[in-house]
Length: 578
Image (tube, rainbow, N blue to C red):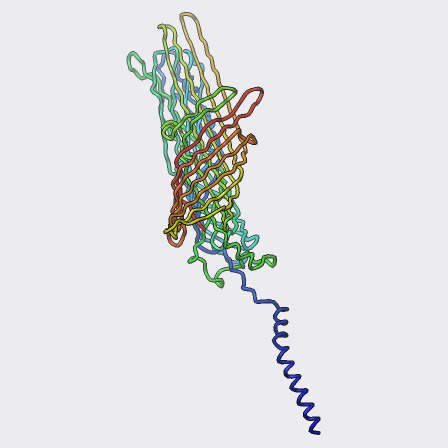
């Protein structure tokens, strides 16, 4: 009996010890099968106040500037009035095609998981201009009216105040419709000269200038994609209509011998300001404006079964620099057009004093970096317009009158785009300066170049002699345009010296072409940047100098066209870091 009890007690103790030894491993197996707890993904909502920047292209919806003239007073011997008024009427094509840059601010409220409403205001510095010339020779009972006119219009600035209604296709991709108020500053100018032959009547150039701040409407749509909790990128299209602007001014002729008023035409110049806008931009939403999850229809950010938590957190390691800046361009070299070399030496002074368009290249640079690896994209665009007209009257002998009218317009468009990848090869610190370091990067990519030229010229001439019974009218118009574009592979080195955190000097240089696109190309850049914060946002400021050398040529029909020039000038800008 005693022996049996002992055996039972030993068996129970052994079983208890076995349970105690195996319990942790069983618990571990059970936890292993269930899986480790996973932190919930970050919560995302479109609700909140945001600010951002945009860059885009505008093109017109209504081309012409119209000038209508009516004769209101005519005591000329030959009855020049109707012919004079008819010659001072017509349409001039004046497209508003150009690029612009601006900023926006707004607020979104995501009231369900899929739908949101918002309000946005934006303003752009445009300088979008267009113009052309009018040249007419019209018959009058007593002879001819020779007319030359230059008409221009511009959209100096514009902006909108719009409501938005959006739909979240995915938690981080939004499409929306938008519409509301449009406003802008519009300018219309005209200069019209006319001669009446044969006669002793003269008239000053009829000049007119109108500037108005106009209000209209706009409608459009777009899409926006979240790049993180606060940052998003958007692409947007708008149609705008600011109505028509017009002014009136007279054209008066007086007798050159007596000074008596002989003829008056009342002229009305009008132009409609409407068109299309396509732009891309970035928005940054402020943390203090994002409400708690219970208030807004928030959804997990990048919450997908296929994306592991480690992959989601890797997104935060990427650093983004968005830097729009201005490049004040100068050119030295020559343009080859049909075997003829044309000098292209211009300075920023020439662009300010002789060009009718904004003399800066709008430029933007984006960098994405993670550790030693980075990707970059860079784009610069500039357009210069030169226009003018002349009217000359001559009388070699008393009976012969000669009138010559000529006008011309030149438009030059330049674009340079880059994209590539860079890798940090080495980094070292200077002795005694623990916060200062220098890094050496190698980079490679592609550079795209585009040069477009449009030249329009017209001339009219009239000769008249009553004694010789001679009337000769001649006209000639010339229009030339050309485009050259190329893509170069480029390789280069960059040195980055950090004086202190947020204070850096960069110097980079590259070579390219090698006959694949251009014969040879090179680039040099040196600049100083300094970071600063404003209301919790990280900004960076830049000042530097950039020079690009291009040697490109192509052959068409046995004639050479190309560019061998250096484009250079100072750059400055302010961007954001994320």
